[in-house]
Image 1 (tube, rainbow, N blue to C red):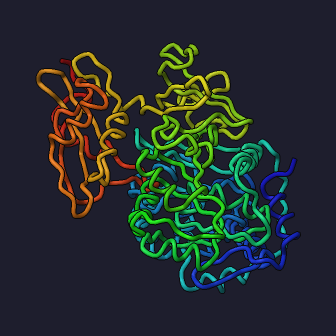
Image 2 (image 1 turned 60 degrees about the horizontal axis):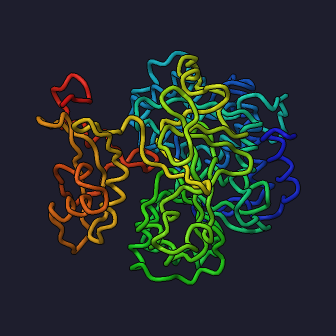
Length: 512
């Protein structure tokens, strides 16, 4: 079995004259991208790095991002992506926690790191400024070809940090290639010249598609940011076959075309992941994109694990429970529902989701205690709450840390969010627990109302009462017009909204 670097090298040789990367008005062939990557590999080695060292990067999607992707792999370095919307303290935590020796940063983000990197001993900062092209060209394009083992670490990706400080998740070459295989195992095949559009950073979710497209001879289009307004026109104009999206992006695209079906003959697959999708958004997206929607469940720690294509997802009709599921376990993965003592639960019961697959972390970098807590006998304990039905469909109910205990009842915010999303006037919603004198804590729903629509508190509460029962209804509703705050990877930051309500409390739970 090849390591990641060798697999990429082979594809570069097979497809040397085919278009490989398009970004910022530039189109480069496989041969050109590989050559640039080798030059960067030699530049990084000249800076004192050796195979196995960690090298971080802070950037948007661009040609230079492909340089880094290739260059780090060719030099046998462990890539540590930073996220451009993170705080300076988060950058510091990731750099120090992984022991990075070099960080490469786009000029526009250099100031963000200036105060962060000054006090990190032994860290070299390489700024990609206007002199980058001449600097890159000054290094040779010979292949350094360091010895790499399949069980050497290839990348350290950080978890989103929505439940605390981000954790460095280490993946070996073996695991990353297995992940690459599994991401595309149940998708339509990539054919020579197929185009994959990346509007999210290839440092995160969309990056899972970069390598399989590269290995198959497709072309990766790297956009700096996502623009919903002309997105469908872009798909048609540039004959895009693939793109990755989180549910909020899909909702924005649906809104931009008024929910109308689009004629997109080149489109093969819209890959949805990273957060649960509401039934309403899924059905609306199916109306717009037709049978091209695929969804996958997994975590940074182990991915992918469950999967579902459009015919399976939508063929049973809009009222089918399957609309709200996260698919069925994949052929190369295992999934179990566990109780608080880590025992398997019967079908239909709710508990913590445990997953195991060929493409999963070796552990949490530099944290043996966390690794032991999250990895049990080779299984990853996800912190997600879910259940399996008798047909093997997974339903993700919530996060362990997000559970609301109100008057002795356990309430999962995701259940309320799904119910509230069924109201046509709701654009976005998040539910969390706030202090309550009688019940200890109670659900509060924060709702973003769709443009031009009216909505009142009683409608929201009444809908939940009708669909879920009286004890699960929110005690109050807060309305806002601004979008909900999101993490650097697009997930709604429940804790940011919840924190002000708990100011002055000693802990974030409250007894009745």
